[in-house]
Image 1 (cartoon, rainbow, N blue to C red):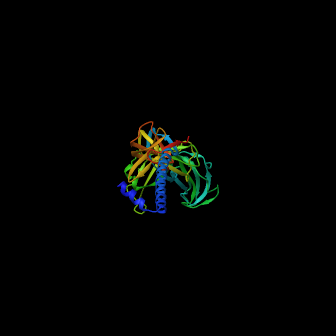
Image 2: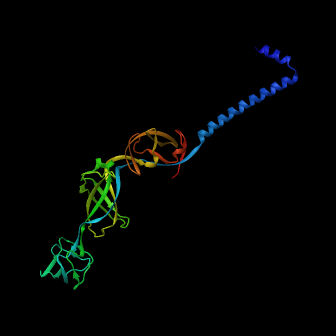
Image 3: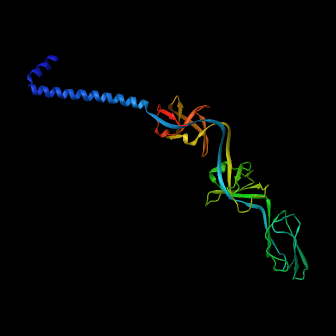
Length: 304
């Protein structure tokens, strides 16, 4: 084979030999250069460092909650009205004061030949603004003032049917208002409607809360966080660390400055934290920022 090649080269003129050698030299140089490039790329890929943020998983209580909005009302509220036509003879309260069941509120001198009529408080509460003065003419059923029981307030709100399975009268909640910083009110549901609204696909519930500090007023907007599910001693990680691919869940963990992908199983989940039921243990550190740039085995630098 070699002799045939030599005989073939001997038959070529010097110019053709030169051109052939030039082509062979260029081809060899190209292959050599490409091989060096591949080697360099592998080295670069191995040494490339990605900056990420990571955090250790924690042991705590996993909670699933649902937030509803409610405009709070007094549990008992009534319009105090005149029972007769007549003239206001006397007023026995100060506006905004506390009254007891049976306390006298108004004395009305009837123009219907009935005589004097006393109007009393039907329950304990706070009396509202007086709409009449002594000597004013009043008509039967005319509103004189309002009476509210502020000791208990009513939170009434609608919940989506998707959480129907969690609803019972033991379901606890925390209610608060942005207008009352650092004030939280807790309780359980007192009433769950028997029907779902067909147009809104919601169910009406209400709860009573003690207005122990008299800060709650009718009409105040409240946020209500219902505790649907709770589990103690759970492994928890931030929501941002989760990667979901084809209905499977993964995280990147940190092993000696290297990112390692790990399949996990999850349980209770809320907007901030996720319960991990399988795949992680206490002390593991998960990457929650920068993981979109990673591959399994990527070199990493953790930002503090």
